[in-house]
Length: 331
Image (tube, rainbow, N blue to C red; front, top):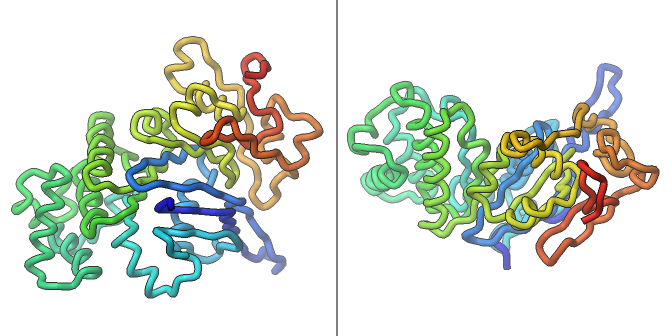
């Protein structure tokens, strides 16, 4: 059994306009995927594709007007959607932990680093405070923070961006989670620090046997650090599979355009031909949501595209999976 099983997850933003008419934004549409323990899954896609919203929906961190309207989320055999809020709170920060993209807004500016870490441990494990403080120093050392004893006395404003991100990672690991969700974990960091943080996350996943979801805009990060990839567009996973399969044989026009727009491909003559703006989630086009921006769009694209299995673990959701945007040939 998979550690995480998400099936047909649908999340909408439901609000009223100035005329008091109900407006519905279909932000997530039948998102389904599984994740095994010890594996890293990378979510990629443009801004507004639904990557972070998927993570928030899984963890039950939605706030109005966002609302899950369908689907299921099973974590370690437990149905998170049917779980009482107190039970879900006991899992969040304990068995499921998140590393967010902005440590400056996630750390308490009025509390020393060591005390914040110890507080996370105390919330879920109880026990003597001395044990929690020892655990805090242990995790600080595990994420490569030098001189943990003295650094635990630091205030958040005294930390560099990279050091603050390491503290957030240590905080996420305080209770030995089974699933770690890293939402744009290297945003705002310089290239050297980015590599250090990503190497650290990958190493910790292997060391502690965790599963990890990495949310990013950077295909290079997914290529180097993930085992599997899920490509999202307009709240839908349009292609998914092992990283090697998807990068070597991308089947969906959106995936093909993302790969073609990477610096490496552009340097050797590639081109990104997918223009236009993201679709209006309040008024999604019928059928394939990409059809207004896709060079392959035909009348059939006004109908829902099928999910085509490329092999046992790789699939694409498109009427014309296998055609290259560059030459229109089928693979």
